[in-house]
Length: 132
Ligand SMILES: C/C=C/C(=O)SCCNC(=O)CCNC(=O)[C@H](O)C(C)(C)COP(=O)(O)OP(=O)(O)OC[C@H]1O[C@@H](n2cnc3c(N)ncnc32)[C@H](O)[C@@H]1OP(=O)(O)O
Image 1 (tube, protein in one colour):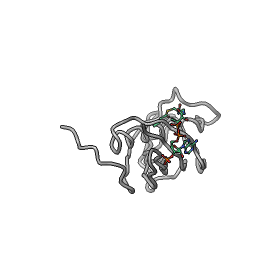
Image 2 (cartoon, protein in one colour):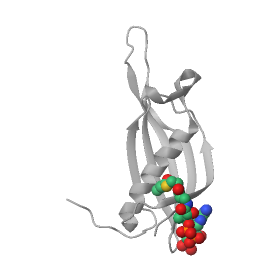
Image 3 (cartoon, protein in one colour):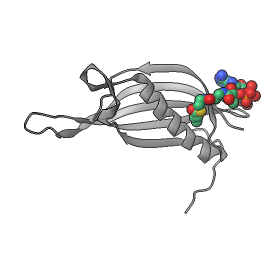
């Protein structure tokens, strides 16, 4: 079943969830590079444009990106975007990555992991996507 295209309605939200594979660890302490969050923002923005405009859209610019807390391999992330302004073809969106679960490995339990009591804001951004 398909949902109808809704048009660029301010306040529309898209949320994805993603496990961060250990193959993406890039720095000491299994830290993931900041560009990883930007890649995830492209994916939620794509679904947003499909929902609002029936097209994948093209990312034009970011006017703010803030890395507030680390993203690590083994994290489970919630990635969200919200449409905050719509021009003729421009769609301004705010993005967030929250860490919702994290590895808690010990020698005895190498696969241990836990849901966090409170999601941790890792990355925030505001950017503009352009649709045809
Ligand atoms: C969803 C995620 C996808 C991706 O990540 S794709 C990968 C990265 N992105 C790209 O490869 C895109 C490369 N860039 C382009 O192809 C072009 O460059 C654009 C299509 C993004 C824009 O070019 P043009 O169509 O010629 O733009 P215009 O006709 O001058 O403007 C149309 C609307 O877009 C706004 N705009 C244009 N550039 C920017 C910018 N850099 N930052 C913010 N807004 C921009 C304008 O103001 C206007 O807006 P108004 O329709 O509301 O009047």
